[in-house]
Length: 305
Ligand SMILES: [Mg+2]
Image 1: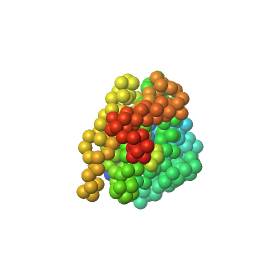
Image 2: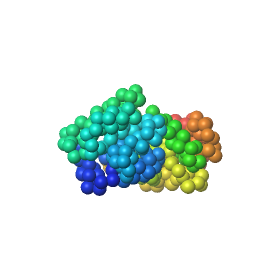
Image 3: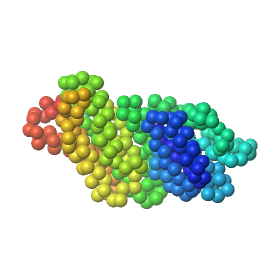
Image 4: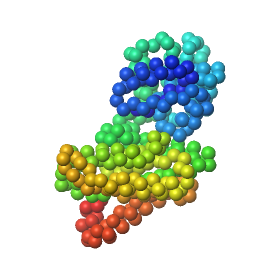
């Protein structure tokens, strides 16, 4: 789970982060910012499940300004306003602006915070008509196709608005069917988990990695320096996935993946076309490997897919 804590009172921000870690001990990542401007920038380029926004963030009602400016662009993030004032009108305004809750800073316990996190996320998911399971892949913990599509749409809108590029990578594991048939699904599942870890290891925390199908992954490279940077990351991931064999409960498996990429707006501004361009390149790489190995096409179609 990814949290953003936008709070300018340092001791309070520290306290809140400690409490979040206690409430949600598994896989929590927390970013902390102290100004409204930083909060907007982080929300613009990262996906957070929940954002705590200080009401008085660097100027009176600064948190509310952030809420006003982002309400329509961060459709999947739940916001909670942190305030020092028990002010009914302010609380009502926050909820009207789309916040899921309005809590008074020094008056809640760990239990209340944990309740606030669960409720806020539940309400947000209900609002967007989804369930948590509908957004994440339980095997790898990564986002799934539904979440990825929404994140890609958001990221592309921001890239167009800011005149920035965006990189899209599609990654298809080679020989996955072969691994599954030979060693069984349990080993296949663990291979996918290790592959997911390697992909995440080659990307920045602001990038997005998802499992979009059985043995298919995808990534969004946010604000790449250039198209060349996207090509370089494509190559780096393809190498990292095949550089060393995978050790799964003592079984050593040589595996790898074919990776294709496309750059917005260079290849297309249309997301379906961008996906197709990355797919075409991915299959090109896969076919090159097939030819290099010199096997019959039928055999390889079965084995490499
Ligand atoms: Mg495959």
